[in-house]
Length: 354
Ligand SMILES: Cc1ncc(COP(=O)(O)O)c(C=O)c1O
Image (cartoon, rainbow, N blue to C red):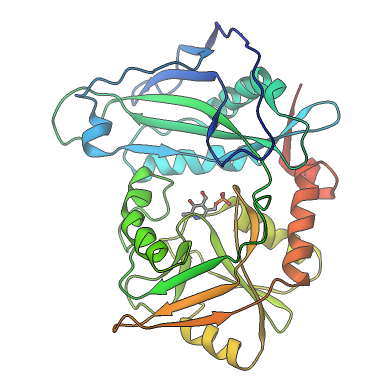
């Protein structure tokens, strides 16, 4: 792999707490890969510019597109990329599910590290700010024919992101409804692919029209068990123990989910990865045994869910209210400390670039 570097650095600045994903870091890494040659000969690292897409490009028509989301944090003397290996492995797996090139994890790791070396200077010193990295791969064959593409473009781009909670203490409300579907058996629920997000938008719009921010999905088959939110994994605390839906085959294998489970175990908490039903939530709310409900993901770390609204067939909504509590707060703080190189897990999960 040869890196062809043509980046010209500019006077890039950004205000504290910009909207998520809105600040475009002016650097782009890209390369071509094919099924026969998944290790690119040449990788370009240059300035972000309008990347031309031929209207015949298969990705626009047939949707073969996968991505990752991970963060790099400014540390005392270097920059730490959190769980780079896990993102590389998930990207490799997403490629398989979507019949695309399976980018070798080493290529992913080298490209993301080279990108971060070039861009770490753009991470501001404001607290809890980071470089949100967006590796992306999409089909590049140029013909109108339903087939998996032979050639692909792999890119790395990024955005400066701030403290997710900076906008104040607005209540987080999520909606559950039996008619909402994000993933299904034999589908693409475990892949981080554009298709899953496209599918979720009508449901999210409906939830937002009703005053909720996100949808909390039930399994598509029985409509009884929780799966995840559109962009985060789901947890609750019951009788002091941690519960999260098991990886059913339709849920994204969240990297924050995995980290929160590890932190909880490290702190001596019992963790159950199992089926979590809507009925169990309602009962646990009623008898007070479920004390905290939260969602986790790279973008926001850990977000307590204040209200879970359950929409019935007649359009009536019953709200179940919860409060943020000490278990979620402790897990979130440990996670943030890990990102900042302050815990025993930091060594394991931060890839340092200088
Ligand atoms: C559908 C979905 N579930 C869960 C997550 C959380 O995953 P991670 O912790 O790896 O960010 C995401 C994150 O983008 C997601 O899109």
